[in-house]
Structures are given as structure tokens and as C-alpha cells.
Amino acid sequence: MEPMRVFYQKTGTAKYISHLDINRCFQRAMKRAGIPLWFTEGFNPHAYLTFPLPLALGYESLCECVDFRLVGEMAPEEIIKRLNDTLPAGLRAYGATPPVYKAADIALAAYEVRLTLADTDVVQAQKILEAFFAQPQITTMKRTKKGEREISLKEHLHDLTLGAAEGEIRLDVLLPAGSELNINPTLVLDAFGQQTGMMIDRLAVKKTAVFTQDKKNFA
Image (cartoon, rainbow, N blue to C red; front, top):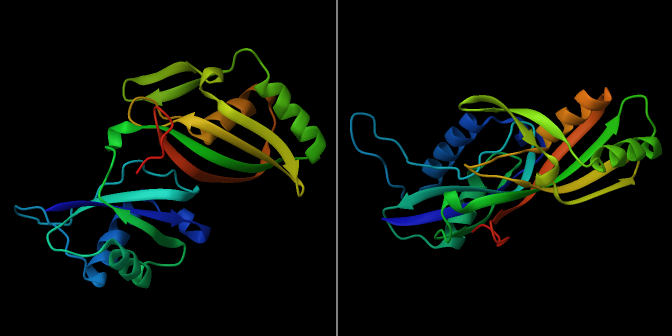
């Protein structure tokens, strides 16, 4: 069996497909594409697919991936072509390679966030957001397997940039990701809303890159 990792984009209306349905979607697409997948053994055999860093519902992504095993030879280029012939709109494979890193090596994810604040022009919105992120301390409550706990967000906001363009705010930020600590933009913006009382009118989030702890591209 040969391990294989396929990288794909999830954009447009595909952002509303849940993680569970993405799993089903890829299983069906790979079956139709004739990709020689390894199936689990036992009473209910099924294609064994794993997604190293599942995407939040409603987010777009340029850097999703799925891991599986091959029981026959197939060139990476052929896997990509066959998948793109069968995947629905908004899902597009762009790379296939044997895994370099393990899922546990994921440590950081980069996001592009575009938003507007209700009843606030973009200039004022930028000032409000800049003041929020300039605070020496930003804390919030995060749900974990052991219950809720308070975490400090400020120390986890890496490479943050904030600007205004085309009538909206653009926020780029690098956040912890993976099994040990996973912080997504929604948690950050929820903390912003709770502290300031400001309502977000429009919001679009896109994951743009995934990195290991030493900031190497996850592959």
C-alpha cells in the first residue's frame, strides 16, 4: 500500500459542505474516478480517508488535503485529473504526493478575513479593530474536551496585518492549528464582539496556508 496525500481547494458554494459530507463526497468521487483505494477490512469495509486539518463550515480554503492509501499504481497527475473530472463545483484538486509530514506536525494556519461592521464605515471600523488588537492583553473562553477554559489570544496572533480596501476590512493573521491548540478567526472575532459590542455585518474567511512549527509548508 502506498500512502498518498491530495491537496485541494474548497471555494465558492462548496464552503457550505460540512466536513462529514466532504468525506462522503471524496469517497464517491474517488470511486467514480477509478482510483485504486485501500479499503478497511471487517464487517463494513470502507475507503479509509483522513483529513489532517478539517475546515470550519462556511470557510473557504486554498490548502485543504486528504490522506488515503493506494493498492495499485497511479501517477499523481492522473489522480488529480480524474478527481477534477468527478468533484463538484468549488472543489478542485491541485496536488498529489506521498505525505512528507504527519498530521501531528501541523502547528499554524494562515487566514485571510474580510469583513464589515454594522452601521460603521470602513475608516472607523479599521480604527476600532486596530485599537482592539493593540491591547496588551486579549482573553476569551474556549471550549475544549475538558470543558471551557480562558485562553490568552494576544500571544497567538502572529503576523497580523490590518487594512481597508473596496469598502471592507482585510485582516491577515497566522493562528495556532492542530491537535494541541486550534484557534480560528471566528474565536478571535467573537472575542472582539463580546468586548466591543460591535456587530459584524459581512464576513468571509479563507484559509490560505498551513505550516509546521518551524513554518515549513505542510505537505
